[in-house]
Image (tube, rainbow, N blue to C red; front, side):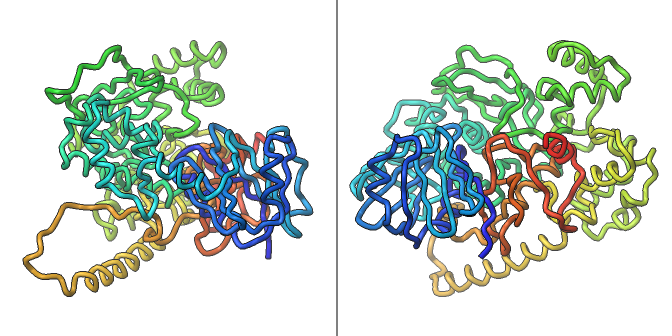
Length: 549
């Protein structure tokens, strides 16, 4: 058995369940010698030392490890916790934050977290009762949540972040869930209809399950992103100045010391919704939790880092000297007259394509008709001249510097027509034959199962609206850590963000075979790309990761 180093981090709910899934495969069913290197879990480590770990469970942002003898270890990672797994022969020394070390004859694990507490089954029962409904648990009960929520006078925006109501939802998901449900964050919970609640729960389950399966925070639906001519768009309003759907102004304000977002055109205030106090245009920033693609960040210079700002200015022949505030203002002035197809004022509106390249037209044609003749006629990046490559990249808002090989790889990583990348931007994955075949097979299996379940149903039985299935067991194939990392890179995001599944620098073996969801990451660590022809390469994020090494 080969053991690659795995760094397991948790901050966002989608990753918490991936961490739990990975840890169950690595720790459960084995006896461990336990110790507390920094002494902050000394008694707890002594109690579980020599005991077998039976299983791990996640509820919202909380992790529970069950050991023989009725012992339960409660873990809350906080903002930067991690559970790292090492080959025993290569295990490093514990850090000053390592509260629990587990080891056997092959493996060593280090746990650093905000909360590490020992209790019994009663501790788990107490926490389970206090925590709300988690859409990623099989036993989630939306009916119980509805009864509890309907009696509260607090705003729905507050309750979505209250772990006693919606276990696992964070600030990014709050903004995107309420946007997709069309509900204003300030609306009192006791004024929400059952239909509105069902919509909120449906999107909560859908987005959290998507995060679990994909390993990234992806809230924009594929079809809508393509219709909006923004195939790399990943979020609608979080950390955005303009609504991704209607291009209206996004407002932001403080809600219990967290920034709340809303588009009041898509989330209109009802008569019983109080006006927003202190609402303003959002202060944009380079999010470490949910990075926008480079193409989108180039349209909002505030989100670019210094290196990206300087590169963008140098490509325009402008000075790249000065403080970040000066660089942002300089680039904003230079791009004020730029026109982007994504700025269409109306959802689904036709956009002039006179300045679009054949490759962009082919991508749009692919979305509408995979058998389009335009797809067959377009040149592959490897067949294009350097000038054509640079023009294509510039049209996508991507860097144009480098040798031809770099330009080809960069364009292939960004294009759904790439013949090399097996994992490209999730918004346009339907262009990949392999994934399309898998999806078709999964649909056939699901349809057969649904037909079997409903075979004996009476015709007069009333049909209800869409009720999402909770839990994760039905999700099928889950993206591996390597696939999640390369999807992010292909979309122009950094792979070294600690909150999502990604490769670890020191991992030689790469992701496990068979669609494993093992999370392999470290806080602010760069990623190593396994040598495989099935993975896209050459994105700006990959180049930066190489240089950082």
